[in-house]
Length: 266
Length: 266
Picture 1 (tube, one colour):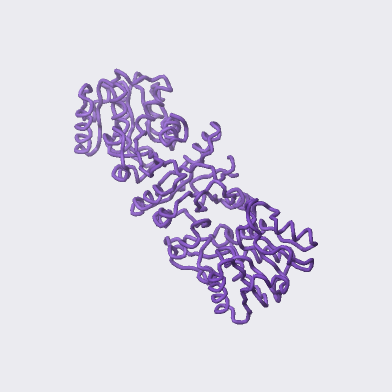
Picture 2 (cartoon, chains in turn green, brown):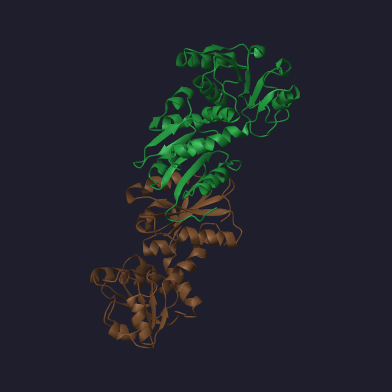
C-alpha cells in the first residue's frame, strides 16, 4: 500500500474483537486502485468504551468516518447525530461519516449490499417471494433491503416467534405493499431463500431451515461469509439450485461504505 | 509498506496543523525494517479537542501510543497519568505510551534525541561549556539533556530575560553541579553553541545570536530541521567550525520513541 503521510485521510473499523476483520485489506486496496490518499485502520474498542472513543473521533479533523461491526451496530444508532432512513428502520448503523464539524452521520448498508450482490449475479429481487431465516441484525437488514428492492412477499422465519412477529410488524408498517408472514415451514411457497442467521458458521450448528424443503427451482442465498460454502449452500447446490455466496455481500458493500464516508466520490 | 490487518498495532502523531509531519513515513519505514506489525498514522486535533481525543484513545485497545508535537507538548503534561522525570523537569511531553489498561505514560525525548545525535557524530557533551540560544520548549529540552549529559556549564540566552532566568533557575535546582548563566554576549567563553530558537526557519528571521562572536574552535549545533542549512550553520561552516544539523535530532529520536511506545523492544 502507499505510504501514509501528513496529508492522508484516516478511516476506521470499530469492532470487538478486532483480529478477524478483513476490511482494512479490502478497503485499502480499493483506495489504492482509485488513487485515494486514504487509509482504513482497525480500532479495537469494547462496548463500554464505544461512546468515549466516538467522541474522541469527532475531534480528529483528518478522520473521514468508520465502519461499525459486531457488537457495535445497534449501539451506534444512538451515538450518531443523524441516521439514514434504512438505519432507523433496521435499528442499527454499520457505517458512519464524520462531517467537517465533527457530526456523525450513520447509515446501514448490510442489506443494500446483499441486494446489490444479488443483482450483480443477475438475480433481480423485484416480484420474488422471499423467505428469510432469522430475525436478528443481519436478517432485519436483508429483509428491509429486499422489501425496498421490490419483493412481492416476505416470510420471516425465526425460532423465537416473538422476534419474527416484531420484525414482520415493522416491515408491514414500512412497506404496506409487501405481504409479510412468519410461517417457518412455508419454504416451498417461495422463490428466494436466504439464511440471515449465523447457523452454519460452526460445524456443530443446527440447520437454519429444513433442507428437505428445498427444490431445484429455488434461488438460495447466504449471509455467512466464512465458511464460503455452508451446509445450506452445499445442500442447495446438490439439489441443482442457483446459489449466492455470502462474500459478495461484503464486497459490494465496500464501495458503498467508501462513498458514504467520503472516501470515494458519491 | 506492509498491509494493515486486524492484527496491526496502531500508533499516532497528534499535531495541529498535521500536513507537514514526516514522522509517519519515518516510523513506518522503521517498523518495516524491524518486521513490526505496527503503523503510525496522523491525528489532526486542535488544542480544544486534545483532551477528548486522548480520552477516546485510552479506550482503543489496539493503540500503542503517540507522539505529541506542536502545539500539544505542554498540554500533554497534565493529560498523562504518569510522566518521566525529564518530562516533568521540562514541563512538556512529546511521546506517550498507552498501557493495556488505558493509562497514558508520557516522556520528553527532544533533548535526549539532540544529545544522542551529537554523540552519534562523536561529539561528547561531557565537560563542555554549552551556550543555548532560546528558552522555549526546544531550548528547555536541549538544556536539560545537556545538563544530564554532563556539560560543566550552561548559558541560557534569550531575548526575554525573565524566561531565561526562570529556565536557569530550574536547571540549577535539578543539576546543582552545573553552573548556569544567562549572559547573551558570552558566546566566546563556550565550546558548544546551540540554536534552540525557531530563528532561521524563515529567510526574514533575525539571527538567533551574534554570528561575529563565533570562532573556528566552536562546535555549532542546530535544532531547526528545515532548512537543513540555516544562516547560523552557514556562518559557522564559513568560519571552519564543526557543525551539527538539526535533522539527526529527530532521526535519533525515532527509535527512542518507538521503544517508549512499545513498538520496538526496550
